[in-house]
Length: 334
Image 1 (spheres, rainbow, N blue to C red):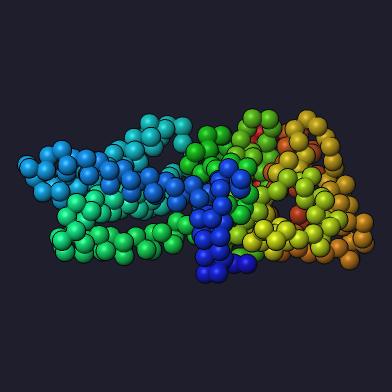
Image 2 (image 1 turned 180 degrees about the vertical axis):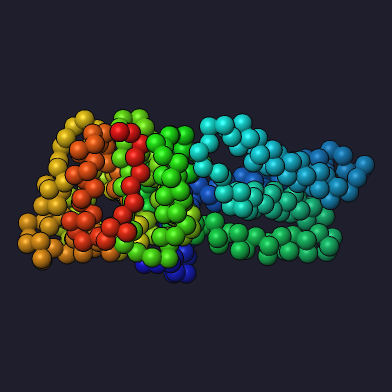
């Protein structure tokens, strides 16, 4: 599944998010986004109502609506700039400013919509305010569809946490490895079969980096799946296992991130044993799993910190048939 189709969009919105109790089903990313924007609308609506009622003899309602919308616009501006400014020294990757600004504009428009609707409630005969509110609704149509759909891509990737690349504070051993990460994010949406191996020891940020890379790809509306190696082993042996709640699975997503392949200092599995599990007790020539992994963009998160182990695990993509020029390696420790 390459793109979220309208049927899935409507089902997620009306069946899964707007009906049922969140105490029963849990809170999804899409539901949280809807609640967040309703909060922005409300914070524009109620302060405008209160000010218009308290000072109704001094200024028309639209005056207070503009003030409230402007105050929230300033707040959103500083909320965007200040946290990023203070974390500048610790940042390895630059924030995606165009993305962040678009998100901020979306929030401000919801504040403004709430403020303008308050004028319609107080003075329903004012046609100009009604038209302004309608124009704001029209302007919000694209941001609503864009952000809601984006949350669907993030949600069904099943990341263990939400994390952006600009939040990562680890260290690379080589400046070239930073370029490898950025190149993987920018170039692989156009191709398949690109494999990125991330090596690191305990608390060096390898899982954070892997999730951050995949999350940036999900924000580009690419189908991603996060899975631990242990869970993946069970799916290797049960290829017909189907979960109707998933929009895509490990074998048909475009990006697969495999975490905890070999936990730090545990030596739970060798790369030869991993290949045996990939083959799922079949002959190498009959292994469908090898072919799936070979042609998929895969991020391998490996908890190894010995040079000889890294050399061995580096042979894994080659063993399943991945060309050398399709394999990239990032070392976070020696």
